[in-house]
Amino acid sequence: MEYALLIDGKLVPGAATLEVVNPATGSRLALAPRADESQAEAAIAAARRAFPAWSGRSYADRRVYLERLAAAMTERAEDFARLLTQEQGKPLDQARGEVGASIAAITYYAEQELKPHTLRETAEERIVEQRYPLGVVAAITPWNYPLLLLVVKMAPALITGNAVIAKPAPTTPLTTLLLGEVAADILPAGVFQTLVDQNDLGALLSRHPHVAHVSFTGSTPTGKKVLASAADTLKRFTLELGGNDAALILDDADVARVAPRIFAGATTNSGQICLAIKRVYAPRDMVDALCDALAGQAGDAVVGDGLEQGTTMGPIQNRAQYEKVLGFIEEAKGQGTLVAGGEPIDRDGYFIAPTIVRDLPDDARLVREEQFGPVLPVLAYDDLDDAIARVNDSDYGLGATIWTSNVERGAEVAARIESGTVWVNRHLELPFDVPFGGAKQSGIGRQQGIEGMEDFTQPRIVNVALA
Image (cartoon, rainbow, N blue to C red; front, side, top):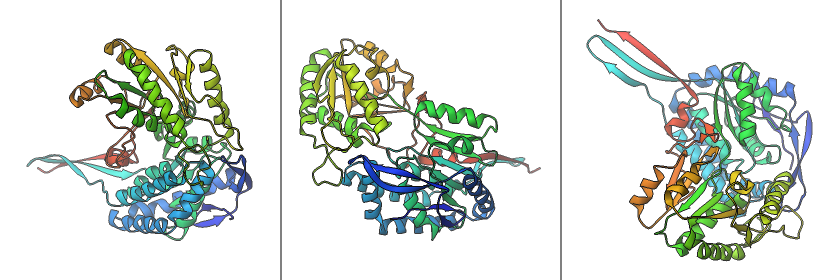
């Protein structure tokens, strides 16, 4: 299949190409078109031209376009899913889930509207807060959920009247390009465009005076660069960055019930989720049973090509991340006790066995940093107050989970965790009407919910004297 960029309503070749690798084989999957600076400038100019007419439409008018896009994606849902598995690696059922969630997100946001909000109305005055779109939005997305993480930026930005330029990660550009192909026949020229790069156009987009907002999901170090680039123009931005999400098991929890859910929360998408469980704290007298249960879960996992029936865990998405995760494992072997896994799987592609490690010190790299892979450290605690302090002793604050048989106690503990989202007895529940975002170095701004829509708009206060 040939792929093309979508620029100004036309599907066009790139100035060059880049190789996209199937992580299940380690070999070339496709050649993707690669944009250069002149094509990026052309996309920005086209978005600026499209913005006045698009923003001038009513919410009801824009809703029709988004509903058509969702319907067109539904018709090609299986194409999206199989392509997603091939470029990203996740099992096909998980890819289908991501595609379905992406369609659902577009449908959800198509129905939303930011209406004027009356702040004060008396015989003497009327004060109303209105929201208007910002202009050109750059949506910069990572490789772990390349379709869904684009859509939860694109859909709220479009429905509120902005024009969107999508820049996917260079290792997973194909589903974004397919979305552009589908959108080319539906959305007005310049309203949605796709640019693929080799991580060399992000700075141009984030510093460009005609880009009004940058919505970035990715690592904290890269997010800091985006923030620095955006500073000169004081453009608006949303940063959803890294996490080192802790699971805190209370002493009244049922280990047999909790362990499978913690394992799933740590290893879904091969652990490549910003909100995945990255470290587990358990009462010392529960650690043995917990580790045994997690080791059993690891042993039952079927690691393989996501297109193969029965696969429950795919490969690491790219070689650089694969080597990084193996580095975490090798270092942890010398500091703690390996409970399960600990080795790459001997086959083509970037496969690592799900790995459980215990007895690590709190300053171990696997505890302090984000591994972004199927490697989970289990840490013992003797005092709950101390455990909470250790959970909070992190530069990150994206998500956390509390596991308990007493939900009210769990909610009380959750209220002491310094994190943007804290779940009790559940994990990775992210309904579209509930905003999420990070604390500390896990990000700035909100995605999803009405708050996520508002991030793509500027508030305007209209203050009227009536007498």
